[in-house]
Length: 603
Image (cartoon, rainbow, N blue to C red):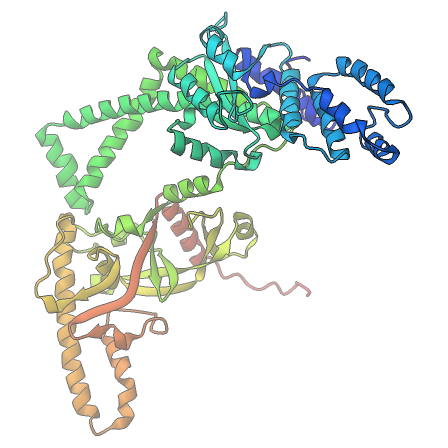
Protein backbone atom coordinates (compact mmCIF):
# COMPACT_ATOMS: atom_id res chain seq x y z
CA UNK A 1 0.00 0.00 0.00
CA UNK A 2 1.19 3.51 -0.75
CA UNK A 3 2.65 5.41 2.18
CA UNK A 4 0.65 8.46 1.16
CA UNK A 5 -2.12 9.15 3.66
CA UNK A 6 -5.57 8.71 2.15
CA UNK A 7 -7.74 11.78 2.45
CA UNK A 8 -10.40 11.38 5.14
CA UNK A 9 -13.42 11.50 2.86
CA UNK A 10 -16.52 9.40 2.44
CA UNK A 11 -14.81 7.55 -0.43
CA UNK A 12 -12.07 6.20 1.82
CA UNK A 13 -12.93 3.49 4.33
CA UNK A 14 -11.67 4.02 7.90
CA UNK A 15 -9.68 0.77 7.67
CA UNK A 16 -7.89 1.97 4.52
CA UNK A 17 -7.17 5.35 6.08
CA UNK A 18 -5.81 3.62 9.19
CA UNK A 19 -3.55 1.22 7.26
CA UNK A 20 -2.16 4.09 5.21
CA UNK A 21 -1.68 6.13 8.38
CA UNK A 22 0.35 3.35 10.01
CA UNK A 23 2.73 3.25 7.04
CA UNK A 24 2.97 7.04 6.96
CA UNK A 25 3.69 7.32 10.67
CA UNK A 26 6.25 4.52 10.53
CA UNK A 27 7.93 6.45 7.73
CA UNK A 28 7.92 9.71 9.71
CA UNK A 29 9.60 7.97 12.64
CA UNK A 30 11.89 6.01 10.29
CA UNK A 31 10.83 2.64 11.71
CA UNK A 32 12.96 -0.05 10.07
CA UNK A 33 12.18 -2.96 12.38
CA UNK A 34 9.24 -4.10 14.50
CA UNK A 35 9.82 -6.64 17.29
CA UNK A 36 6.87 -8.28 19.06
CA UNK A 37 7.69 -10.31 22.16
CA UNK A 38 4.70 -12.56 22.84
CA UNK A 39 4.22 -16.00 24.36
CA UNK A 40 1.69 -16.79 21.63
CA UNK A 41 4.63 -17.19 19.22
CA UNK A 42 5.44 -20.56 20.81
CA UNK A 43 1.84 -21.76 20.52
CA UNK A 44 1.06 -24.20 17.72
CA UNK A 45 -2.60 -25.25 17.48
CA UNK A 46 -2.89 -29.04 17.72
CA UNK A 47 -5.63 -30.74 15.72
CA UNK A 48 -5.74 -33.89 17.88
CA UNK A 49 -8.04 -32.46 20.62
CA UNK A 50 -10.56 -31.62 17.88
CA UNK A 51 -10.73 -35.29 16.81
CA UNK A 52 -11.36 -36.32 20.39
CA UNK A 53 -14.21 -33.81 20.70
CA UNK A 54 -16.07 -35.05 17.58
CA UNK A 55 -15.35 -38.81 17.86
CA UNK A 56 -18.23 -39.62 20.20
CA UNK A 57 -20.79 -37.18 18.78
CA UNK A 58 -24.16 -38.49 17.65
CA UNK A 59 -25.85 -37.25 14.45
CA UNK A 60 -27.44 -34.27 16.24
CA UNK A 61 -24.10 -33.31 17.79
CA UNK A 62 -22.34 -33.48 14.41
CA UNK A 63 -25.02 -31.34 12.84
CA UNK A 64 -24.60 -28.76 15.63
CA UNK A 65 -20.84 -28.59 14.98
CA UNK A 66 -21.41 -28.04 11.26
CA UNK A 67 -23.97 -25.33 12.04
CA UNK A 68 -21.51 -23.40 14.22
CA UNK A 69 -18.39 -24.20 12.21
CA UNK A 70 -19.17 -24.26 8.48
CA UNK A 71 -15.51 -24.73 7.56
CA UNK A 72 -15.62 -28.47 8.31
CA UNK A 73 -18.07 -31.17 7.14
CA UNK A 74 -18.53 -34.05 9.59
CA UNK A 75 -22.24 -34.92 9.57
CA UNK A 76 -22.56 -37.34 6.63
CA UNK A 77 -19.04 -38.74 6.29
CA UNK A 78 -17.47 -41.70 8.15
CA UNK A 79 -15.13 -40.67 10.99
CA UNK A 80 -11.93 -41.77 9.18
CA UNK A 81 -12.86 -39.71 6.11
CA UNK A 82 -13.63 -36.70 8.29
CA UNK A 83 -10.25 -36.97 10.00
CA UNK A 84 -8.39 -37.17 6.70
CA UNK A 85 -10.23 -34.16 5.26
CA UNK A 86 -9.61 -32.07 8.38
CA UNK A 87 -5.90 -32.97 8.39
CA UNK A 88 -5.65 -31.81 4.78
CA UNK A 89 -7.36 -28.52 5.58
CA UNK A 90 -5.28 -28.10 8.75
CA UNK A 91 -2.09 -28.08 6.70
CA UNK A 92 -3.46 -25.18 4.62
CA UNK A 93 -4.84 -23.02 7.44
CA UNK A 94 -2.78 -20.40 9.24
CA UNK A 95 -2.44 -20.22 13.03
CA UNK A 96 -5.33 -17.79 13.43
CA UNK A 97 -7.71 -19.95 11.39
CA UNK A 98 -6.72 -23.08 13.33
CA UNK A 99 -7.36 -21.38 16.67
CA UNK A 100 -10.70 -20.08 15.39
CA UNK A 101 -11.80 -23.60 14.37
CA UNK A 102 -10.70 -25.07 17.70
CA UNK A 103 -12.66 -22.40 19.58
CA UNK A 104 -15.84 -22.93 17.53
CA UNK A 105 -15.75 -26.74 17.82
CA UNK A 106 -14.97 -26.52 21.55
CA UNK A 107 -17.99 -24.28 22.07
CA UNK A 108 -20.25 -26.55 19.99
CA UNK A 109 -19.14 -29.67 21.89
CA UNK A 110 -19.05 -28.05 25.37
CA UNK A 111 -15.30 -28.47 25.70
CA UNK A 112 -12.77 -26.01 27.07
CA UNK A 113 -10.54 -23.84 24.89
CA UNK A 114 -8.78 -20.63 25.99
CA UNK A 115 -10.43 -17.84 23.91
CA UNK A 116 -7.45 -15.52 24.46
CA UNK A 117 -5.39 -17.80 22.19
CA UNK A 118 -7.41 -16.82 19.13
CA UNK A 119 -7.42 -13.17 20.24
CA UNK A 120 -3.64 -13.11 20.61
CA UNK A 121 -3.07 -14.85 17.28
CA UNK A 122 -5.51 -12.49 15.52
CA UNK A 123 -3.90 -9.45 17.11
CA UNK A 124 -0.44 -10.51 16.01
CA UNK A 125 -1.66 -11.30 12.49
CA UNK A 126 -3.41 -7.92 12.09
CA UNK A 127 -0.35 -6.07 13.31
CA UNK A 128 1.86 -7.96 10.89
CA UNK A 129 -0.50 -7.28 7.98
CA UNK A 130 -0.27 -3.53 8.63
CA UNK A 131 3.53 -3.53 8.64
CA UNK A 132 4.29 -5.80 5.71
CA UNK A 133 6.98 -3.54 4.24
CA UNK A 134 8.94 -3.41 7.52
CA UNK A 135 11.21 -6.08 9.00
CA UNK A 136 8.70 -7.78 11.32
CA UNK A 137 10.04 -10.14 14.00
CA UNK A 138 7.76 -12.29 16.17
CA UNK A 139 9.75 -13.79 19.02
CA UNK A 140 9.08 -15.79 22.15
CA UNK A 141 10.28 -14.41 25.52
CA UNK A 142 12.83 -17.22 25.90
CA UNK A 143 14.30 -16.55 22.45
CA UNK A 144 14.32 -12.82 23.24
CA UNK A 145 16.50 -13.47 26.28
CA UNK A 146 19.22 -14.97 24.11
CA UNK A 147 18.95 -12.70 21.05
CA UNK A 148 18.07 -9.32 22.61
CA UNK A 149 21.42 -7.56 22.13
CA UNK A 150 21.55 -8.48 18.44
CA UNK A 151 17.91 -7.60 17.79
CA UNK A 152 18.25 -4.16 19.38
CA UNK A 153 21.22 -3.08 17.28
CA UNK A 154 20.42 0.14 15.46
CA UNK A 155 19.17 -0.44 11.90
CA UNK A 156 21.01 1.28 9.03
CA UNK A 157 20.21 4.85 7.91
CA UNK A 158 19.51 5.93 11.49
CA UNK A 159 16.49 3.66 11.56
CA UNK A 160 14.41 3.08 14.65
CA UNK A 161 12.92 -0.03 16.21
CA UNK A 162 9.39 -0.40 17.50
CA UNK A 163 9.43 -2.96 20.32
CA UNK A 164 6.05 -4.23 21.60
CA UNK A 165 6.10 -6.50 24.65
CA UNK A 166 3.19 -8.65 25.83
CA UNK A 167 2.59 -8.08 29.55
CA UNK A 168 1.39 -11.63 30.28
CA UNK A 169 3.95 -14.21 29.21
CA UNK A 170 2.69 -17.02 31.43
CA UNK A 171 2.16 -19.49 28.57
CA UNK A 172 5.93 -19.84 28.39
CA UNK A 173 7.78 -21.87 31.00
CA UNK A 174 9.63 -19.68 33.49
CA UNK A 175 7.56 -16.58 32.79
CA UNK A 176 4.59 -15.04 34.62
CA UNK A 177 1.63 -12.70 33.96
CA UNK A 178 3.93 -9.80 34.93
CA UNK A 179 7.10 -10.89 33.12
CA UNK A 180 6.44 -8.49 30.24
CA UNK A 181 6.93 -5.56 32.63
CA UNK A 182 10.32 -7.00 33.64
CA UNK A 183 11.39 -7.15 30.01
CA UNK A 184 10.07 -3.63 29.50
CA UNK A 185 12.17 -2.30 32.38
CA UNK A 186 15.25 -4.03 30.99
CA UNK A 187 14.83 -2.41 27.56
CA UNK A 188 14.05 1.00 29.05
CA UNK A 189 16.99 0.73 31.44
CA UNK A 190 19.41 0.21 28.58
CA UNK A 191 18.54 3.69 27.21
CA UNK A 192 18.40 2.86 23.51
CA UNK A 193 17.58 6.20 21.87
CA UNK A 194 16.51 4.44 18.68
CA UNK A 195 14.04 2.06 20.38
CA UNK A 196 10.38 3.01 20.90
CA UNK A 197 8.72 0.75 23.46
CA UNK A 198 5.12 -0.25 24.14
CA UNK A 199 3.53 -2.86 26.36
CA UNK A 200 0.54 -4.75 24.94
CA UNK A 201 -2.06 -6.78 26.80
CA UNK A 202 -5.56 -8.25 26.89
CA UNK A 203 -5.62 -7.50 30.64
CA UNK A 204 -6.95 -3.98 30.10
CA UNK A 205 -9.28 -2.27 27.64
CA UNK A 206 -8.66 0.71 25.38
CA UNK A 207 -10.73 2.91 27.70
CA UNK A 208 -8.48 2.14 30.69
CA UNK A 209 -5.06 2.46 29.02
CA UNK A 210 -4.30 5.81 30.66
CA UNK A 211 -5.35 4.44 34.04
CA UNK A 212 -3.00 1.47 33.64
CA UNK A 213 -0.27 3.80 32.43
CA UNK A 214 -0.45 5.55 35.79
CA UNK A 215 -0.55 2.26 37.72
CA UNK A 216 2.49 0.94 35.83
CA UNK A 217 4.38 4.10 36.66
CA UNK A 218 3.55 3.84 40.35
CA UNK A 219 3.92 0.09 40.76
CA UNK A 220 7.00 -0.50 38.61
CA UNK A 221 8.71 2.91 38.76
CA UNK A 222 8.72 3.36 34.99
CA UNK A 223 8.51 6.90 33.66
CA UNK A 224 5.61 7.89 31.38
CA UNK A 225 8.06 8.95 28.69
CA UNK A 226 9.58 5.47 28.43
CA UNK A 227 6.60 3.51 27.15
CA UNK A 228 2.93 3.42 26.17
CA UNK A 229 0.43 0.72 27.24
CA UNK A 230 -1.73 -0.58 24.38
CA UNK A 231 -4.73 -2.85 24.74
CA UNK A 232 -4.64 -5.80 22.35
CA UNK A 233 -8.25 -4.94 21.57
CA UNK A 234 -6.80 -2.20 19.35
CA UNK A 235 -5.38 -4.83 17.05
CA UNK A 236 -8.84 -6.02 16.09
CA UNK A 237 -9.57 -2.62 14.56
CA UNK A 238 -7.20 -0.90 12.17
CA UNK A 239 -8.29 2.64 13.19
CA UNK A 240 -7.83 1.78 16.88
CA UNK A 241 -4.44 0.23 16.10
CA UNK A 242 -3.38 3.29 14.09
CA UNK A 243 -4.40 5.57 16.93
CA UNK A 244 -2.46 3.50 19.47
CA UNK A 245 0.68 3.45 17.34
CA UNK A 246 0.34 7.18 16.76
CA UNK A 247 0.57 7.90 20.49
CA UNK A 248 3.34 5.35 20.87
CA UNK A 249 5.38 7.22 18.23
CA UNK A 250 4.44 10.62 19.68
CA UNK A 251 5.35 9.77 23.24
CA UNK A 252 9.11 9.77 22.73
CA UNK A 253 8.98 12.90 20.56
CA UNK A 254 6.89 14.76 23.12
CA UNK A 255 9.44 14.02 25.82
CA UNK A 256 12.29 15.25 23.64
CA UNK A 257 10.44 18.49 22.86
CA UNK A 258 9.68 19.07 26.54
CA UNK A 259 13.26 18.39 27.60
CA UNK A 260 14.77 20.72 25.00
CA UNK A 261 12.26 23.48 25.74
CA UNK A 262 13.03 23.11 29.45
CA UNK A 263 16.72 23.59 28.59
CA UNK A 264 15.87 26.78 26.65
CA UNK A 265 13.82 28.15 29.55
CA UNK A 266 16.59 27.26 31.99
CA UNK A 267 19.17 29.06 29.84
CA UNK A 268 16.90 32.10 29.44
CA UNK A 269 16.22 32.11 33.17
CA UNK A 270 19.94 32.04 33.93
CA UNK A 271 20.48 35.07 31.67
CA UNK A 272 17.51 36.90 33.20
CA UNK A 273 18.90 36.28 36.68
CA UNK A 274 22.26 37.57 35.52
CA UNK A 275 20.63 40.77 34.27
CA UNK A 276 18.84 41.22 37.61
CA UNK A 277 22.09 40.77 39.50
CA UNK A 278 23.85 43.23 37.19
CA UNK A 279 21.64 46.12 38.37
CA UNK A 280 23.83 48.47 40.37
CA UNK A 281 22.55 49.82 43.65
CA UNK A 282 21.57 53.21 42.14
CA UNK A 283 19.38 51.69 39.43
CA UNK A 284 18.11 49.05 41.83
CA UNK A 285 16.96 51.67 44.34
CA UNK A 286 15.09 53.69 41.73
CA UNK A 287 13.59 50.89 39.60
CA UNK A 288 12.61 48.50 42.37
CA UNK A 289 11.91 50.71 45.36
CA UNK A 290 11.45 54.39 44.49
CA UNK A 291 9.21 53.79 41.45
CA UNK A 292 7.21 51.10 43.26
CA UNK A 293 6.59 53.19 46.36
CA UNK A 294 5.45 56.17 44.33
CA UNK A 295 2.91 54.08 42.42
CA UNK A 296 1.81 51.91 45.34
CA UNK A 297 3.16 48.73 43.77
CA UNK A 298 4.88 45.93 45.64
CA UNK A 299 8.65 46.02 45.24
CA UNK A 300 8.73 42.26 44.77
CA UNK A 301 6.14 42.53 42.00
CA UNK A 302 8.31 45.11 40.25
CA UNK A 303 11.37 42.90 40.60
CA UNK A 304 9.42 39.94 39.20
CA UNK A 305 8.30 42.14 36.33
CA UNK A 306 11.92 43.03 35.50
CA UNK A 307 12.79 39.33 35.56
CA UNK A 308 9.89 38.51 33.20
CA UNK A 309 10.99 41.25 30.80
CA UNK A 310 14.46 39.75 30.52
CA UNK A 311 13.10 36.18 30.33
CA UNK A 312 10.76 37.05 27.44
CA UNK A 313 13.60 38.88 25.71
CA UNK A 314 16.18 36.12 26.12
CA UNK A 315 14.08 33.03 25.26
CA UNK A 316 13.57 33.88 21.54
CA UNK A 317 17.24 34.76 21.17
CA UNK A 318 18.31 31.44 22.68
CA UNK A 319 15.86 29.56 20.45
CA UNK A 320 17.60 31.07 17.42
CA UNK A 321 20.99 29.63 18.44
CA UNK A 322 22.34 26.76 16.37
CA UNK A 323 22.50 24.69 19.56
CA UNK A 324 18.72 24.51 19.66
CA UNK A 325 17.95 23.96 15.98
CA UNK A 326 17.12 20.35 16.75
CA UNK A 327 14.15 21.60 18.75
CA UNK A 328 12.64 23.21 15.65
CA UNK A 329 13.15 19.97 13.74
CA UNK A 330 11.49 17.99 16.54
CA UNK A 331 8.53 20.37 16.64
CA UNK A 332 8.07 20.08 12.87
CA UNK A 333 8.28 16.29 13.07
CA UNK A 334 5.80 16.16 15.95
CA UNK A 335 3.40 18.44 14.09
CA UNK A 336 3.62 16.22 11.02
CA UNK A 337 2.84 13.13 13.10
CA UNK A 338 -0.04 14.83 14.91
CA UNK A 339 -1.66 15.74 11.60
CA UNK A 340 -1.89 12.16 10.30
CA UNK A 341 -5.57 11.05 10.27
CA UNK A 342 -6.11 7.55 11.65
CA UNK A 343 -9.62 6.83 10.41
CA UNK A 344 -11.47 7.60 13.65
CA UNK A 345 -12.05 10.34 16.18
CA UNK A 346 -9.02 10.18 18.40
CA UNK A 347 -8.89 9.87 22.18
CA UNK A 348 -10.16 12.99 23.90
CA UNK A 349 -7.48 14.50 26.13
CA UNK A 350 -8.12 14.79 29.84
CA UNK A 351 -10.57 17.66 30.30
CA UNK A 352 -9.62 17.73 33.99
CA UNK A 353 -6.02 18.60 33.13
CA UNK A 354 -6.95 21.14 30.44
CA UNK A 355 -9.66 22.86 32.45
CA UNK A 356 -7.46 23.12 35.51
CA UNK A 357 -4.62 24.60 33.45
CA UNK A 358 -6.94 27.24 31.94
CA UNK A 359 -8.34 27.98 35.38
CA UNK A 360 -4.84 28.59 36.75
CA UNK A 361 -4.03 30.78 33.75
CA UNK A 362 -7.14 32.95 34.24
CA UNK A 363 -7.54 33.04 38.02
CA UNK A 364 -5.48 33.41 41.17
CA UNK A 365 -6.83 31.41 44.09
CA UNK A 366 -7.83 33.03 47.36
CA UNK A 367 -5.57 30.53 49.12
CA UNK A 368 -2.64 32.28 47.39
CA UNK A 369 -3.91 35.87 47.39
CA UNK A 370 -4.97 36.16 50.99
CA UNK A 371 -1.96 34.72 52.89
CA UNK A 372 0.27 37.04 50.82
CA UNK A 373 -1.89 40.07 51.81
CA UNK A 374 -2.33 41.04 48.17
CA UNK A 375 -3.99 44.47 47.66
CA UNK A 376 -7.52 44.48 46.31
CA UNK A 377 -7.66 44.79 42.53
CA UNK A 378 -10.14 44.99 39.72
CA UNK A 379 -11.25 41.41 39.15
CA UNK A 380 -11.20 40.33 42.79
CA UNK A 381 -14.13 38.03 43.50
CA UNK A 382 -15.87 38.22 46.88
CA UNK A 383 -18.39 35.93 48.52
CA UNK A 384 -21.33 37.52 50.35
CA UNK A 385 -23.92 35.25 51.94
CA UNK A 386 -23.02 32.39 49.59
CA UNK A 387 -23.19 34.51 46.42
CA UNK A 388 -20.16 35.66 44.41
CA UNK A 389 -19.52 39.22 43.22
CA UNK A 390 -16.62 40.56 41.12
CA UNK A 391 -15.09 43.98 41.79
CA UNK A 392 -15.46 46.25 38.76
CA UNK A 393 -13.75 49.45 39.95
CA UNK A 394 -11.19 51.47 37.99
CA UNK A 395 -7.67 50.16 38.81
CA UNK A 396 -6.33 53.70 39.28
CA UNK A 397 -9.03 54.39 41.89
CA UNK A 398 -8.09 51.31 43.88
CA UNK A 399 -4.35 51.99 43.87
CA UNK A 400 -2.98 52.99 47.28
CA UNK A 401 -0.17 55.54 47.10
CA UNK A 402 2.86 55.98 49.35
CA UNK A 403 0.83 58.04 51.83
CA UNK A 404 -1.58 55.16 52.40
CA UNK A 405 -4.33 57.09 50.62
CA UNK A 406 -5.97 56.68 47.25
CA UNK A 407 -5.82 59.44 44.65
CA UNK A 408 -9.49 60.10 43.96
CA UNK A 409 -11.46 63.25 43.36
CA UNK A 410 -13.69 62.62 46.33
CA UNK A 411 -13.09 61.56 49.91
CA UNK A 412 -11.31 58.23 50.14
CA UNK A 413 -13.75 57.26 52.85
CA UNK A 414 -16.56 57.55 50.31
CA UNK A 415 -14.95 55.53 47.49
CA UNK A 416 -17.46 52.92 46.46
CA UNK A 417 -16.53 49.62 44.82
CA UNK A 418 -19.16 48.20 42.46
CA UNK A 419 -19.47 44.46 43.06
CA UNK A 420 -21.16 42.84 40.07
CA UNK A 421 -23.01 39.57 40.66
CA UNK A 422 -21.56 36.34 39.31
CA UNK A 423 -24.56 34.43 37.98
CA UNK A 424 -25.38 30.94 36.82
CA UNK A 425 -23.15 28.43 35.08
CA UNK A 426 -23.15 28.66 31.29
CA UNK A 427 -21.17 27.47 28.30
CA UNK A 428 -19.48 29.96 25.99
CA UNK A 429 -22.16 29.37 23.34
CA UNK A 430 -24.90 30.03 25.89
CA UNK A 431 -23.20 33.29 26.83
CA UNK A 432 -22.96 34.35 23.18
CA UNK A 433 -26.67 33.71 22.75
CA UNK A 434 -27.62 35.57 25.93
CA UNK A 435 -29.07 39.07 26.00
CA UNK A 436 -26.88 42.15 26.43
CA UNK A 437 -25.90 43.17 29.91
CA UNK A 438 -23.83 40.11 30.69
CA UNK A 439 -20.17 39.29 30.97
CA UNK A 440 -18.50 35.90 31.12
CA UNK A 441 -16.01 34.20 33.44
CA UNK A 442 -14.67 31.14 31.56
CA UNK A 443 -13.25 28.13 33.42
CA UNK A 444 -14.13 29.68 36.78
CA UNK A 445 -14.38 26.15 38.19
CA UNK A 446 -11.16 24.20 37.75
CA UNK A 447 -12.99 20.97 36.93
CA UNK A 448 -15.35 22.19 34.21
CA UNK A 449 -15.08 23.71 30.75
CA UNK A 450 -18.10 25.88 31.52
CA UNK A 451 -17.97 29.35 32.97
CA UNK A 452 -20.38 31.63 34.76
CA UNK A 453 -22.27 34.69 33.62
CA UNK A 454 -21.64 38.12 35.10
CA UNK A 455 -24.90 40.04 35.57
CA UNK A 456 -24.17 43.70 34.79
CA UNK A 457 -27.61 44.75 36.08
CA UNK A 458 -27.13 43.02 39.44
CA UNK A 459 -24.71 45.30 41.28
CA UNK A 460 -24.11 46.06 44.94
CA UNK A 461 -21.88 48.88 46.14
CA UNK A 462 -19.44 48.51 49.01
CA UNK A 463 -17.12 51.12 50.46
CA UNK A 464 -13.50 50.17 49.83
CA UNK A 465 -12.82 50.78 53.53
CA UNK A 466 -14.71 47.51 54.00
CA UNK A 467 -13.02 45.63 51.15
CA UNK A 468 -9.58 46.78 52.38
CA UNK A 469 -10.06 44.59 55.44
CA UNK A 470 -9.69 41.50 53.19
CA UNK A 471 -6.11 42.56 52.46
CA UNK A 472 -5.13 42.40 56.14
CA UNK A 473 -6.75 39.04 56.84
CA UNK A 474 -4.89 35.88 55.81
CA UNK A 475 -8.22 34.24 54.94
CA UNK A 476 -9.47 37.25 52.99
CA UNK A 477 -12.33 37.97 55.41
CA UNK A 478 -13.49 41.56 55.79
CA UNK A 479 -13.29 41.83 59.57
CA UNK A 480 -11.21 43.56 62.24
CA UNK A 481 -10.87 42.99 65.98
CA UNK A 482 -10.09 46.15 67.98
CA UNK A 483 -10.17 44.40 71.37
CA UNK A 484 -6.60 43.15 70.97
CA UNK A 485 -5.12 46.64 71.16
CA UNK A 486 -2.86 48.06 68.42
CA UNK A 487 -2.70 45.52 65.62
CA UNK A 488 0.64 44.17 64.43
CA UNK A 489 1.17 45.00 60.79
CA UNK A 490 1.87 41.89 58.62
CA UNK A 491 5.50 41.97 57.50
CA UNK A 492 4.55 41.00 53.92
CA UNK A 493 2.76 44.30 53.30
CA UNK A 494 4.69 46.76 51.15
CA UNK A 495 5.07 50.33 52.37
CA UNK A 496 1.91 52.00 50.95
CA UNK A 497 -0.22 49.31 52.50
CA UNK A 498 1.68 49.54 55.78
CA UNK A 499 0.55 53.18 55.86
CA UNK A 500 -2.91 52.10 54.75
CA UNK A 501 -3.04 49.57 57.59
CA UNK A 502 -2.69 52.32 60.17
CA UNK A 503 -5.34 54.47 58.51
CA UNK A 504 -7.82 51.59 58.29
CA UNK A 505 -7.26 50.78 61.95
CA UNK A 506 -7.75 54.43 62.86
CA UNK A 507 -10.93 54.60 60.73
CA UNK A 508 -12.56 51.69 62.55
CA UNK A 509 -11.41 52.90 65.96
CA UNK A 510 -13.14 56.25 65.33
CA UNK A 511 -16.17 54.41 63.90
CA UNK A 512 -16.43 52.28 67.06
CA UNK A 513 -16.47 55.41 69.25
CA UNK A 514 -19.22 56.88 67.09
CA UNK A 515 -21.24 53.69 67.30
CA UNK A 516 -20.91 53.46 71.10
CA UNK A 517 -21.80 57.13 71.53
CA UNK A 518 -24.74 56.96 69.14
CA UNK A 519 -26.13 53.81 70.73
CA UNK A 520 -25.98 55.37 74.19
CA UNK A 521 -27.91 58.40 72.97
CA UNK A 522 -30.37 56.17 71.11
CA UNK A 523 -30.98 53.96 74.15
CA UNK A 524 -31.60 56.94 76.44
CA UNK A 525 -33.96 58.46 73.87
CA UNK A 526 -35.92 55.25 73.21
CA UNK A 527 -36.04 53.83 76.76
CA UNK A 528 -39.56 55.18 77.23
CA UNK A 529 -40.52 55.08 73.56
CA UNK A 530 -40.89 51.44 72.47
CA UNK A 531 -42.05 52.41 69.00
CA UNK A 532 -38.51 53.56 68.11
CA UNK A 533 -36.73 50.31 69.01
CA UNK A 534 -37.23 48.90 65.48
CA UNK A 535 -35.16 51.63 63.87
CA UNK A 536 -31.98 50.80 65.80
CA UNK A 537 -30.54 48.86 62.87
CA UNK A 538 -31.18 51.87 60.61
CA UNK A 539 -29.12 54.04 62.95
CA UNK A 540 -26.26 51.54 62.76
CA UNK A 541 -26.57 51.31 58.99
CA UNK A 542 -26.13 55.07 58.74
CA UNK A 543 -22.90 54.90 60.72
CA UNK A 544 -21.26 52.05 58.83
CA UNK A 545 -19.22 52.64 55.66
CA UNK A 546 -21.44 52.82 52.58
CA UNK A 547 -23.18 49.52 51.88
CA UNK A 548 -25.96 48.97 49.38
CA UNK A 549 -26.53 45.41 50.59
CA UNK A 550 -28.44 45.54 53.88
CA UNK A 551 -30.79 42.95 52.40
CA UNK A 552 -27.82 40.58 52.06
CA UNK A 553 -25.85 41.48 55.19
CA UNK A 554 -27.53 41.82 58.57
CA UNK A 555 -26.18 45.21 59.59
CA UNK A 556 -27.18 44.57 63.21
CA UNK A 557 -24.54 41.81 63.33
CA UNK A 558 -21.65 43.74 61.75
CA UNK A 559 -20.44 45.26 65.03
CA UNK A 560 -20.25 43.61 68.44
CA UNK A 561 -18.02 44.46 71.41
CA UNK A 562 -15.10 45.92 69.51
CA UNK A 563 -15.30 43.56 66.56
CA UNK A 564 -16.40 44.33 63.00
CA UNK A 565 -17.31 41.47 60.65
CA UNK A 566 -19.02 42.37 57.38
CA UNK A 567 -19.55 38.78 56.23
CA UNK A 568 -17.54 39.34 53.05
CA UNK A 569 -14.66 37.10 51.95
CA UNK A 570 -12.27 37.31 49.00
CA UNK A 571 -12.24 33.93 47.23
CA UNK A 572 -10.63 34.43 43.82
CA UNK A 573 -9.09 36.93 41.41
CA UNK A 574 -9.58 37.21 37.66
CA UNK A 575 -6.13 37.89 36.25
CA UNK A 576 -5.15 40.50 33.69
CA UNK A 577 -5.82 41.18 30.86
CA UNK A 578 -9.18 39.43 31.34
CA UNK A 579 -10.11 41.62 34.31
CA UNK A 580 -9.61 44.84 32.30
CA UNK A 581 -11.51 43.34 29.37
CA UNK A 582 -14.49 42.55 31.61
CA UNK A 583 -14.30 46.04 33.14
CA UNK A 584 -14.46 47.64 29.67
CA UNK A 585 -17.50 45.53 28.80
CA UNK A 586 -19.20 46.50 32.06
CA UNK A 587 -18.48 50.23 31.67
CA UNK A 588 -19.56 50.12 28.02
CA UNK A 589 -22.86 48.58 29.05
CA UNK A 590 -23.39 51.15 31.80
CA UNK A 591 -22.64 53.98 29.35
CA UNK A 592 -25.06 52.74 26.68
CA UNK A 593 -27.36 55.24 25.01
CA UNK A 594 -31.06 55.56 25.79
CA UNK A 595 -32.53 55.62 22.28
CA UNK A 596 -36.06 56.73 21.37
CA UNK A 597 -38.54 53.93 21.04
CA UNK A 598 -39.41 52.62 17.59
CA UNK A 599 -43.02 53.71 17.08
CA UNK A 600 -43.14 52.03 13.63
CA UNK A 601 -42.52 48.55 15.01
CA UNK A 602 -45.62 46.32 14.90
CA UNK A 603 -45.89 43.44 17.34
